[in-house]
View 1: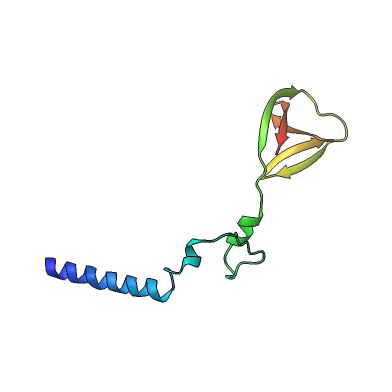
View 2 (view 1 turned 180 degrees about the vertical axis):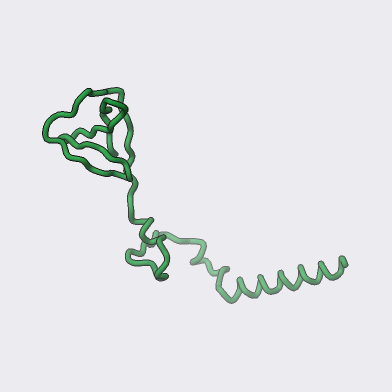
Length: 106
C-alpha cells in the first residue's frame, strides 16, 4: 500500500515537473512582470459576467442624522442600487416611517 502511494506521488511529481518545464514557468519573464495588463472589452464566454462586474462601480448610500417632515418642492423619485430615493437638487432623501432622512450617495 505504501509503495503504491509513493509511486503515485513520484509519477505525479514527474508530470508536474514536465508540465512546468514545457510551459516555460522557469523563464525569468514570468517572475519579473514590470507592467500591469488590462484588457477592455467583452468576456470571451457568452455566459460570463466577470468582464461586466469588473467595469461596474457600486454606489454607497449612507444615512445622516438629519430628518425632514416633508420634502421640498420639485423633487424627483430615483432608484439607486435598488433603493428608492427622492432627489431634490443635490440632496437625496429616503423615506423613514412618516419622515424623510437625508442620505449621502457616494
